[in-house]
Length: 203
Image 1 (cartoon, rainbow, N blue to C red):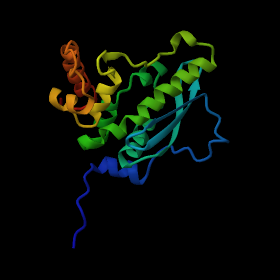
Image 2: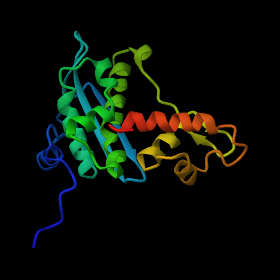
Image 3: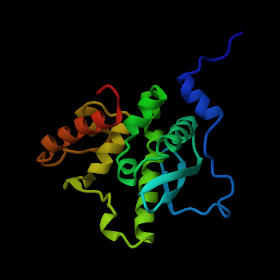
Image 4: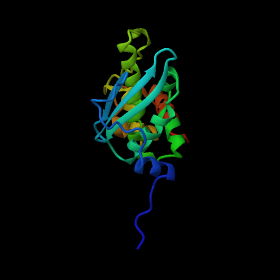
């Protein structure tokens, strides 16, 4: 009897079964920048470390380790290959959508796991800048409150999209946004569409 059908592309399967650039011995690896992030709902945690050619501002190596699912492992594995040879600014702007495209696509319900790698990478790049006295280049990703009544932030909206919200009704169900005075509804709808476009190959 045949087993359950594999829900991922062959490239996802390859990077999950044979992940590239795993950080084997953290204590012995001399990195120039380190980033750690986690997704409480998913239960994943991700660490990314980078080496940088300071003269050229180029990432020469990228390693990682995670306690995560197949999507987190495969997407970070392919990301670690993509950023080698990239300038720091280009690597910082690498999106989860580009990584997902490189993998040939992930199931919608697994996209939220795949963003861990690029978030940890951005933290590692910021860490590199801080270590080398380039505070002016550090970019902060602070949450902004969109719905004052319910205390919903732009990051909450983004997370809801990653968790499956595709309509404003679904966004309200997950966050309660716009259920108070309603003054935030227009901006919330705009952000909903923006995050759908940002994270999914097909909006």
